[in-house]
Length: 143
Image (cartoon, rainbow, N blue to C red; front, side, top):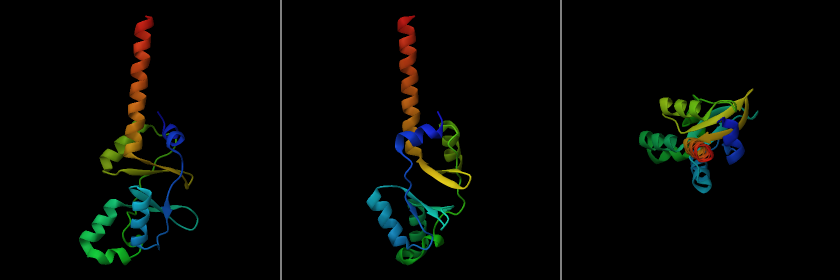
């Protein structure tokens, strides 16, 4: 299964934030939207980083409550690993596991096309496995 299939199922909406936004605003957005990460984008829409729950926790552990008044750019993860629509779910799950990350932007030709989480990929993989099992049952039954 390709990442394109996951995007078709879940949608392509990505909640983004500017690097100059305050961490408090990012935390509020994450909380209200019930999501785990925001993609940090520049004026041209290019991906500059990821700001996740982990970044909030790191900032609070290092700098305490004053982290909330700093800018997202000071706390975001700058090294962004991305995938394309043609990558497979298994490939991207492997990347997430190796790199210990839970969110990966889908990017092609510097254009942000979507965002997939480990939860999205596990859900897709389970659906694919169930579909394969059902197909095998039908094949055996019609023998």
